[in-house]
Length: 406
Figure 1: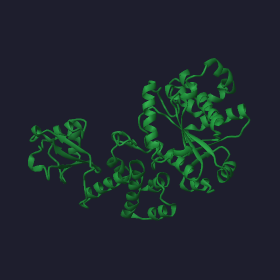
Figure 2 (figure 1 turned 180 degrees about the horizontal axis):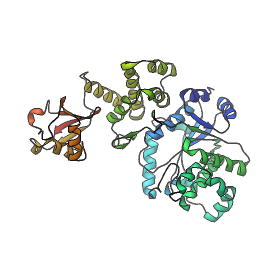
Figure 3 (figure 1 turned 45 degrees about the vertical axis):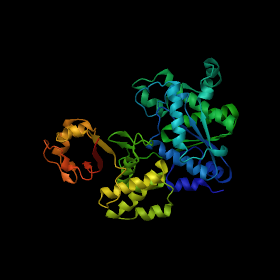
Figure 4 (figure 1 turned 135 degrees about the horizontal axis):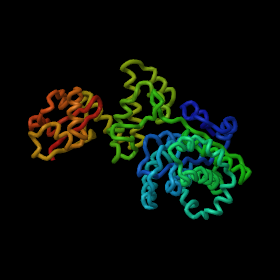
C-alpha cells in the first residue's frame, strides 16, 4: 500500500500530528477509517473546506476509508472555534437541506459508492441523548480547567461564552467515540483550529474504550501575509456555482499572488509535484503559465471540465485571444434605459452597490467600457456602444461583465 503520509508531507498538508511516528507506520501498513467534520450551517462549502476535501481525497486514493461527518446535531449549538460571536440557530429542515447540498459537493472528490466512504450525521446520536445520562457518562471525563485552556474557548471568554457553546467540545469528543464504536474509526483529521477538540475525542476514547486513536490537523490556505484566502469583494469564495460562478472561481485562482501559486497547486490539485516545481520555477511573466494551470485544475475539480474550459476560454478572450466569452457574467438592462447615465446603469445591474462607489471608481480610472477608460462621471450609454449586442464592462483590473439589453 502506498504510504499517503509521504504524499501529504510533500504536498504541505501536515500541520500537527498527535503521534507522528505511529501515524506514519499505520498509514503505510493498514487501511484506516478516519473522519473529518463539516459544519452544515450553509447550503454550500467554501474554499476554506477545499483543503480538507483534498486531504480526504488523497487519503481515499491511498486506500483509506473516509467518513464525512456532518454536524446536524452540533449545528444546533455552533462551534465557538475561531468565532467572535455566537452563531445563528438553524432549524432541522434548514440543516437537512444544507447536508444534502454538502454531500453533492463532497461527491466531486470523494467516492461514496460501495462503502468506500461514509456520510454520517451526528444528529443520529446527539438529538436523542438524555442530558443527565450524557453528563454522568461523558462529562465526568472532562475537566473545566483543561477545557478553558483550549484556544477555541480562550478567544471567546472576553466577549462571553455561552454554556450552550461550552458543551461543544464534549459533543465533538463524543462524535469521535461513537464513530470509533460504530465504524472502527481511529483517526480524526481537521483544520488546525480543531486541535483541542481532536485531543478531547482521543482522550475520551482512551478512557472509555482503552484504545489508541490519532489526530492530524492540516495547514490552512493563507496568503503571503498569513491571512486566510478565499475572500472576494462579494464575500466568501463558494463551491456552489450559484453563489460563485465558475468564471469568477477561475478568475480568483488565475489572479492569486505569485508567492502562493506553489502552495495552491500542491494543496488544491492532483498535479504531480515534479510538474508543480517546474511550473513554479518560472520567473517574471512566465509564472502566469502556472496560474493558468492552477485556475483550470481547481475549476475542473469543483465545477467539471466543461465549465473549466468555458472559464478558460472566456479568460483568453478577455486578454485578447479572441475566444468564446459566453461564461463571462452577464447583466442586463431594459431598452428604456438606453441613454441613461452610466452610473445609474452600474447600480441598476448591481455591478456596483451605489452611485458613490461608481463615482469613486471613475475618478480612480478603474472603469472601462469596450476597452475605453471612462473619465466623465456623467457618461451615458447609447445603442452604438453595443457591439454584437453586448457591452464589455471592466471594473478594476480583473472584474468583467457582459451587458446586454433585455
